Length: 292
Picture 1 (tube, rainbow, N blue to C red):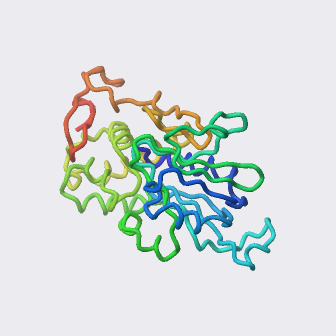
Picture 2: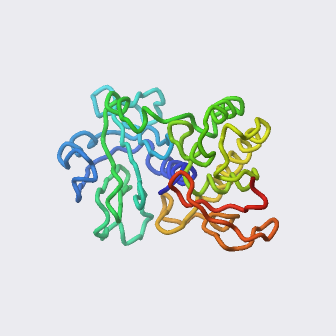
Picture 3: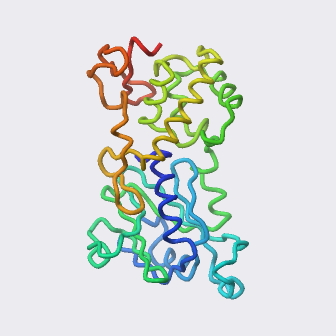
């Protein structure tokens, strides 16, 4: 599942392509992808103008301004328009929201996994694609978005969380520290990849109880987590199998992995064989010598 760096990369890639454009028409080819029906989805978003693209946790949000007379007459340069409709996109395992480049066959012959096609002003197109059909792209009002359980329960963003708040949140938990990192109600957007990589850099074993980690080491984890996330964003995220950015390109951070998916290989620091165990229900890879 795409984690914070991948969704952030997609948001940053989409914004310059679609912000300011109007959704002129929508072709819903798989109605369940909208979680509300094709006709209602199309009615809500057709004629809306894209005013922002952002991320919250692992969710992608495209903010729209409805085509009311006052907003429709606004200049393209207007910056004070308020969003009153949103595309809330959860990519799950294999979802993609992307803009096919000119000349890409997907523009004229989208494959069977392309479930929603958006025709935008200026000849631009955006597509929602999902091979396994677990993801969704919902059109939601302000009120509906405010009540969406997934967003209502999310913890703070790790790149915005102060070291003091991070330490307090983790010291209050008795569970395994990796489980705390993966708990979206405590901290948003972290998944298996970036939990394993940040714990390795901080020298903390994934099964260590969070409450037993010293404040100094938690502060170090906070620093390493931020560094891992920012580096991954700068390298377009991690492509393990299906992930592609807003233009269909792969990420590169998988080439920087120290431990994720490398069980049985030598530790890049001390050459000890990397161990694998289940922590918080997830496969975790770590160095039994370097991490404690």
